[in-house]
Image (cartoon, rainbow, N blue to C red; front, side):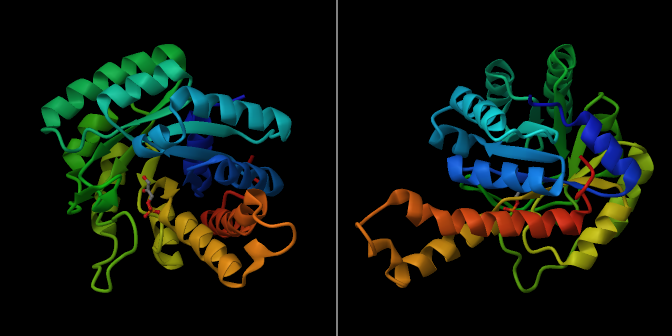
Length: 287
Ligand code: 13P
């Protein structure tokens, strides 16, 4: 059964660890992430961007796939199926399709509009028992083809959005999606500290989990981050493992082309990446 992310994140914030959100792109990724979470007895959040939603044949297909897989694999750890960076329309579509958690990214709207739209979704999610993530301040880098500059959130605006009754809050603190450039200034812990000060128990979300050094991750958790999103690192691990397999000519061995064998090394690489992150975030054994 899919669960809202509320309980797992409340526990994570209180216990000073973070739950990983790992984005899914196909069946193999989903299976690797679920199996690793079960093996490590860790709660987990499966993230679905709108682009990945289209690729995987729509939100209803994804809900069916994830629920079926959890049953077939006997997954007993808490799993939330979460829309990542949803538009207002996308959020409504995922609520209707049976997702257990929604992110509405209204960060590109003027704050008043972000608040109005978030409020509408808070009401819908509350009625259905779903968790809702809101965003204040943009997260830089590329996400589904949209490039953002990355701008630190205003702690007062964070408080205004947190007070609407959202479950978790993503606040820009200098983090970006994808690989960090060599001249990256690092996370703004001053901003994070000020946001936590204003928002109290609210679990904070760190996007752009790929490539943030371990000491920064740990410090961010100590300052109230309870959910960390990882996507690019799984993509890179999958791509590298598949490339090596093909370069070694292994895809041509035996009876000829077998798509299951071709995708197996990438699936194993994702398991290793997810394990490493769960250990770093401290969520192992917290299911
Ligand atoms: P990365 O791709 O940088 O890991 O970020 C993932 C993310 O924040 C998804 O919302």
